[in-house]
Length: 185
Picture (cartoon, rainbow, N blue to C red):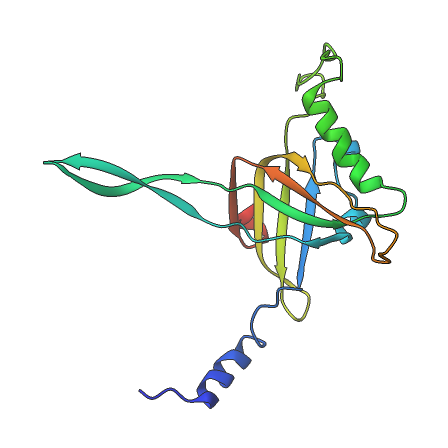
C-alpha cells in the first residue's frame, strides 16, 4: 500500500490533530495542606513530563554466555518546572515538606513524626499528570505513588534579566500507574 499525505492528514484529523504537549494539568499532593499544591500552585507548573518506562535487563549466565532476561522495572526521578510567585508560596510549601522529611536543623524530630495514627506522616504524597484533548477533556492520567521532593533547584537573581523566575523540583516516587481517570487512581 502506498503512503499518501492525504491518508496521513485524514487519520490525524480523526484524532483532533494529535496530542498536544501544552494541553496538560498537574496536581501535586503531600500528606496535608502545608505540603500540597493548591489549585493556583498547580497552574504555576510550567513544565512536567509523562514518566518513562524502564525494565532493566538481567544477565543470566549459562555455558559461558550471558543471556539477557527481563529484570525489574525501575522508575526515574520526576522533575517539574515551576514559575515563581511573588510571595514564594509554592516554593515555601515544598521547602516545608523537605524540612519535615529531614527533621529540624539540629537533628531533632517531634515525637509524632511519621506516625500515621497521629496524622503526622510527612513522608510521601502523590501527583498526577493529566493529558488533555483539544476540547479540554482528560484523555490519559499518570499517577505517581508515594512521591516526595528530593531537590528544589536554586533561583538565579540577575539585574540584567527581566524574565519571570522559574525553578525546578525533583521528586522521587515508588511507581506510577496510568489509564483513564478512574483506572489510574
